[in-house]
Length: 268
Ligand code: ADP
Image (cartoon, rainbow, N blue to C red; front, side):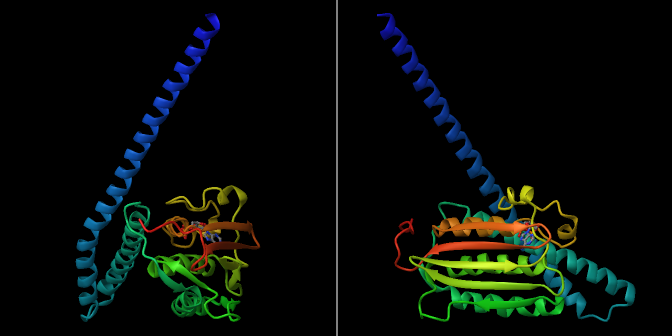
């Protein structure tokens, strides 16, 4: 009887522990929902007045301003432009982080996506004196096609490439390498820039994370770019990892299931 009593007591404790664990999970989920709702609402509400500010700044810029006014105008335009980028990133992060937001699934050729991204970032890189090289993907047509959302995948790749350019000093090289590896498409973005310390690598994909490296902090940023990368990759049933050495460069490797390969969850 003693033994049975002991077993019952242990079982009861397990049930209680399970119940409080479930309550904790429910509470965490509620907080997470609240957080993404708050971000979505705030960024949405900010977007309209910001569009008014940007539009009027543009009109002001067409007027014949004296030197003093032109200086103020430039400062305001820079500030408003930066705010616009933060609001845009926040909205996208809220959207891709919301499990109710459906994932678009159409065939996307990552070779094309890379060409589009390079077309946009190429001139910034050139102005800075950073060379961009493109590797792989020539062999088999359709080898680099994945099923997914073209807008999200474009943003994922452009965040990685623009970071590589941003955190690589003049004279550096950024390589974008696209390969088919069995059932996966592998995208590598390699730079020989500032690199990331091991300590910083641990927090890299968290929203609002910025490095502790003073050289990197001189660049403007929101700390949202890599959080968007991680969420987009996860939504596409892929993985992203980073290898980096402080002072000598960084490689981000993204693996996504190739079109038709198993692994991508059914459309929600
Ligand atoms: P942001 O660039 O807007 O600060 P991200 O989320 O894109 O935000 O990146 C987070 C941090 O990771 C950056 O502040 C930077 O310190 C570091 N980082 C990202 N990519 C690189 C890279 N290619 N080389 C060095 N540091 C990087």
